[in-house]
Length: 301
Image 1 (spheres, rainbow, N blue to C red):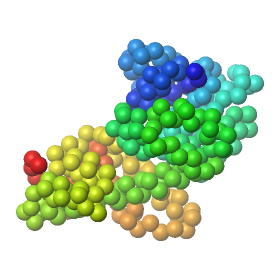
Image 2 (spheres, rainbow, N blue to C red):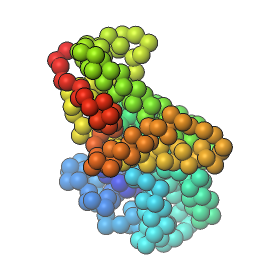
Image 3 (cartoon, rainbow, N blue to C red):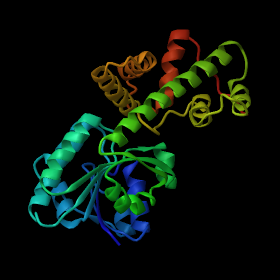
Image 4 (cartoon, helix red, strand yellow):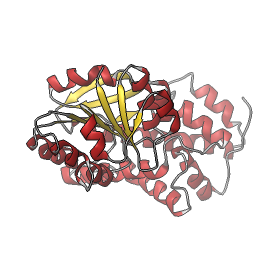
């Protein structure tokens, strides 16, 4: 049994922490929105700050919205590093499962390594459904030894756990994932809007496409949400927009052009401008519908 600290208990973090408790680990929990009562009922212990999490845990997991959030939790007042420094001879592993900047990830690793602790990036894909069912895809940036140490813990939360490379490689992989996923969701929205505008049942079009080369998780899950007009998250548009900002910023630093990603980011920006920050990312279809002045009609399959 490993004593684990878990910081960030939102849509994703809450079920992930639950799987670790059910897997037999002792968890110390912190979230700025409060620790859910059901995690305490399962056996988790709520603490008042990231500092206190670090004082109790051997392995510390963060699952937070954005790069500044991770930096604040790690290095801010009452942050993880203050807890680490209270017991400097006790080596800890910090595993960030957020989706943040690869460059910042490497900088955080340098700072924590200098204090004598290991830092691993392990962002995830699979959304709220994957988190709830422990079927996440987890992309890990770590040393070979670090990966083997944390792999049994990660396998309690994910179905596919892959060692991508050294620290930062996991975040690079997650950026690549978000490029593919955002473009796939936007393509599904275009296809179903086209079918509906042409007077053809989009539900039946989706059903047919799922049997052919166009089949994808985006068509299966997000296509259904578009047809049923279910836009509660899921994965919030504001977070996907953030991920595409990271992709485009990183691409600019590398001298790479990502024109489709830029176009999808602008559609997400339009959603934000229309009050859609907390919509599911499948709601990108709403902006395409505005442009076409035509709403996909809900049909039963």
